[in-house]
Amino acid sequence: MAENLAQDLAENPALKNVYVGRADVDAAGDRGWLLGHFKPLGDVRHSEDVEIKWGVHPRGDERSQWVTGEHRTALLILISGRFRVELPGRSVVLAAQGDYIVWGHGVDHSWYAEEDSVVLTVRWPSVAGYAVPASGDEPAVPGRRAENGRPGS
Image 1 (cartoon, rainbow, N blue to C red):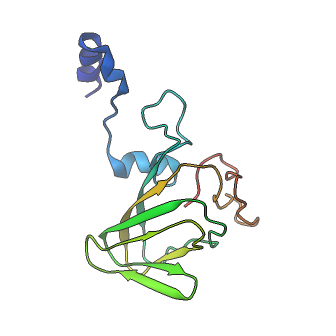
Image 2 (image 1 turned 90 degrees about the vertical axis):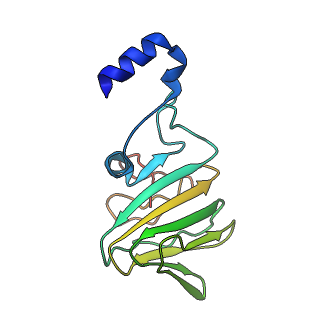
């Protein structure tokens, strides 16, 4: 694949703005996030407008802290498994492939994987913050990134 890309770039320099990957492989490097403000400047996957996550969650996986003070809109689509999104006063269970939920500004949330699950999340805009610290012993603070510099869940 790399040889083909080098040849294609030589023939068409505009292809430097093309990235081809596998969600399950690429997602492992950034807690599942494939696209967003946290990717390096100049990388076609860098975006201040949107974030996309390929979330692979084993049964029992849960967000360690609620997201509070949300300033983004989010769309979460179930690819496989059974996944619960917790909202203030309400739980939403995504149980069939393609089930989805959208929530907007001001909606605090958390989540729990009732079964091994794969979910696709799209958030906009892409802004720093909401990361659960790597150590797990400090609260998530809007505008602050995790200790490892990577985005939160």
